Image (cartoon, rainbow, N blue to C red):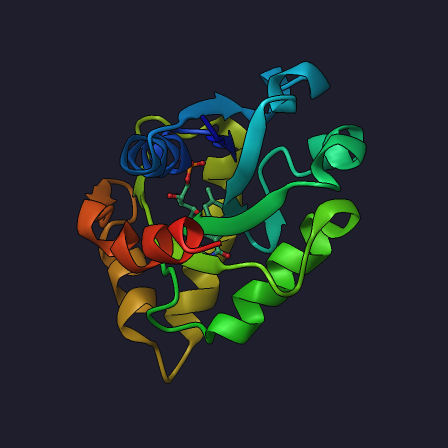
Length: 178
Ligand SMILES: Cc1cc2nc3c(=O)[nH]c(=O)nc-3n(C[C@H](O)[C@H](O)[C@H](O)COP(=O)(O)O)c2cc1C
């Protein structure tokens, strides 16, 4: 039976949760990018690849170069997970992030989606916490804040989670139809 493999890069679990939801709906399995070997792709007809977005850098995107030869003959689809998703950032811009980060294995014709995750400051590494101080200062200085800019400011130091299982449905349908 054709199988689906969902590879993901995630620091704090938001992208992992989406990968597990997508794998569940497609009857496949989810695997962290850093643990994936070419052999894992051997019996996968479709490979979905997703990662969380940190200012345009996708978590574990570097692993793609290693897997690119095995991905060449497979159906692929891609997703990002970020605080804003595509609520206030155009899909084209987020597709460009996917194209840049997954360049060795990105298929411009493949289905893409951009989901909302969240933030939990208690879990953040020192590096990420420090980076968020800069983001906060930048957002505070912005005169025309988007809804998600404001949500990011509102959760500063605390936590928020906008992950939404139902938001994956259209993407799952497009992957099914490949
Ligand atoms: C340093 C840093 C930079 C981030 N940059 C962005 C960003 O540019 N746009 C955005 O929407 N979310 C941004 N986020 C939020 C993450 O994308 C969000 O927390 C995501 O759910 C993390 O998923 P993960 O737990 O799977 O790593 C950033 C978070 C941190 C800590």
